Image (cartoon, rainbow, N blue to C red):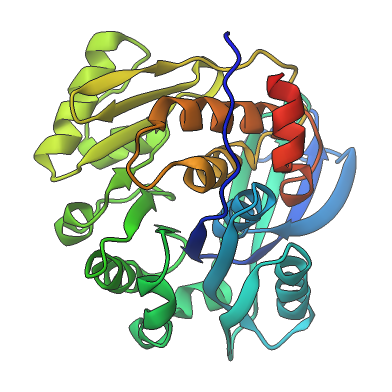
Length: 313
């Protein structure tokens, strides 16, 4: 692949979403139903899809602010401190009367993972919490959200954003049927293959015909631009009349949970406001993800701008 260079620009990005503490269970393979197996190890780390995406954007040099919720507990304090340590504004993270969210990650020896999530405080992020951050959203270059917090909060945030032409990026995970209103105000929708299948209710395969059909199905639902991540195959994009596949960088995966989150955070941080560097930003994001999967842990494995720059050259 030819060398691509991204010019470092500090964008203002708002992230609305989940804050979880991850409990990572290391095992050779998933147990069968009724089977008892021994773990090879057990570790914990800061996580949550949007926490990962926020850190990914911040480590790319973006000015990141977070809207979310934690419990009045040690995990909540730990997550806020973790974001602060990554130079992320946590002034709009509110405290709820339920525990901080958590995730239980069953990590197999081949790098694949199965994840169980307890939403906790994440599921109590309200429309009022979002409205309290209206000025923050309106002054941003882009906002990212997903479905580990209530959809009503996402709709409110994107409606506020579009009043000021702020770029809106929806990462529809965990996959569920999407409110058409939310789709109509999303500039980018970024599912992986399995999430895309749920959203459009059709098989999505790694063929030009299948991916084009998927993009057309998203267009019929009101999606402006589609970006489907394809794991080891890279990613497929359709932006107006532009479409294509950005291939992956071949590496040996150690741990994959934060790969997609790194991709989205890095992509958002490096995409120009006029979208003129779309393919370069996608290539940069792909390289970022390739570095993430080569290290253990979700948030700790996310690379900096300088690390990606070195890898690209």
